[in-house]
Image (cartoon, rainbow, N blue to C red; front, top):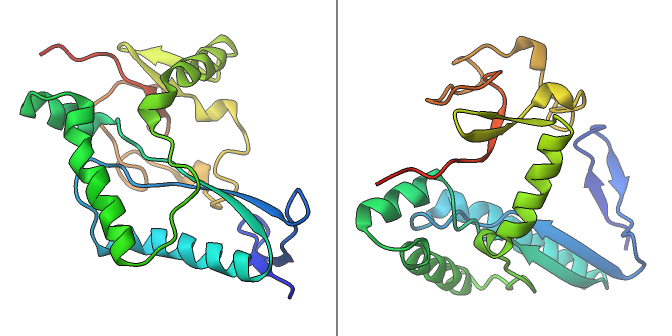
Length: 191
């Protein structure tokens, strides 16, 4: 059975060939566990399940990794206001996500790494980006400088020249070189 997948970059349907014959390593974005998932959130995870099952039926062995984002601005803010730790705040939402996926009979990924389990690696990567000027500090926060990566947006066919603050890219309350630059790290907020 030949599996063809849509190549977002080229717009063509290409034959799927894993890097290692018979073995598929699949990374998918998981939930940001700041609140309960709704049907719109779960749609993406059910697609991953469908792809998983199709690959298995096609005879591939899978190593599926789905991250859990258990730290971001909303989580920090909500945990601070609830006067609980990040882990205490996110625990019920992560548990509810897994319960929802079981109720939908989705196969679980082989691995569910949490963002908070990989802080040292994030710091090392961000330090490397800062050192090579792909990132910069503004008001204590660290932002990725998309101008340093000319191919940024190519996969999504983003017209960077047409970006205007507040029109196609949401503005936020932070000072940055470009409205399109995105946060890699936020400074600690005092209580």
